[in-house]
Each structure stands twice: as structure tokens, then as C-alpha cells.
Amino acid sequence: MIVIAFALVGAFLGQRLAARNGGVRADKVQYAIACAIAGALLGLVVTIVVENLIA
View: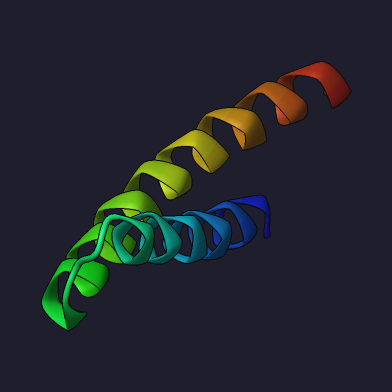
């Protein structure tokens, strides 16, 4: 669940970053996908850390 949330937030922030820099639609999609992947990886690390702290 954490991974999905981080991926969605990453996609949203990536799209906003591209829009702020004056990107066209393809730029926004590319930034959103790249930031979603980065967010998912960060969410995976957070999930692993939380699971190890709980167990």
C-alpha cells in the first residue's frame, strides 16, 4: 500500500515539475512515469524498513 501511495505522489509531482518547466504533454507523461518509478522504489525501501521495525 505504501508503494502505491508513493508512486502516485511521485507521478503527480513529476507531472507538476514538467508543467512548471513549460513541457508539452509528452514531457509531462515522461516526467510522471519517471517520478512514479522513483517513488515506487522509495516506497519499497520504506516498506522494508517498516516491516523490519515491526517484526
